[in-house]
Image (cartoon, rainbow, N blue to C red):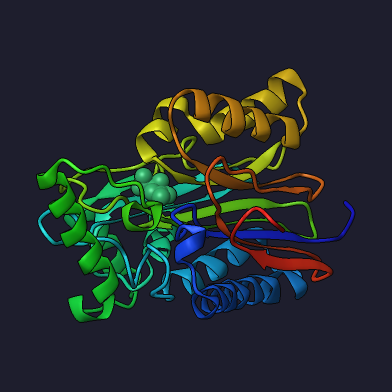
Length: 311
Ligand code: ASP
């Protein structure tokens, strides 16, 4: 083991189009990413596990109203918020996920409770909320999760649908948060949390909580957290494709991720990206759209945040 840690985080591929981004907004997004990076780094720097680090980073991102997860999640077409989350430990491929839930302040902790306290992997509805209550997780009222910006995005989207107009603004449509890490002992983990797509039908579940689609980790290959058009990521089994190409075709993480995002996702008409780390700690963050809110840290040294392609 090299003894170094790596951490990458994302706040989703649903970025504001560059011409609509203000310097103030960009600064707020970068500051929010930096806070989440710091939360994950704090765990890894004291020899904590990759699992604890991705949970800490995703909790911080869920608490940020700027990103579509936890507080600030998007609305369904009937004006509700339904959240999906998943976490996976690459050490033993344990995984937990929740879909369509509302109430827990940090859906990623509900996913972790499913992993640690039940014999199941993916839970929905009242059963998932019971697991969260049994784990004594913090529940919040609707006012906590509501943001005017997401509500207005729903109204705009519904109006555009009625008018037959094309919604070409990814920041209105979607977003997600996620983290991947390699700890100092070589453990890998991934976590992803989302409100899904604006104006989705109630009951729609995207790729984020589906192991092998939006979230995956195995110490032998890589940890992946994806963001983008969930239906396409589901059909392509994006996260597992990357793991499979590494394991079965001996591809590097860089080649596998590049191929899946830049070629396969694009060919399938999907937009988005992902963050991933391999067992040596190499980080990749490909996306085929305008940008992806993201941050990275290699043992606290090569460290930064970015939104568009320039970084
Ligand atoms: N992949 C998410 C979903 O489909 C949305 C996103 O990441 O933008 O629910």
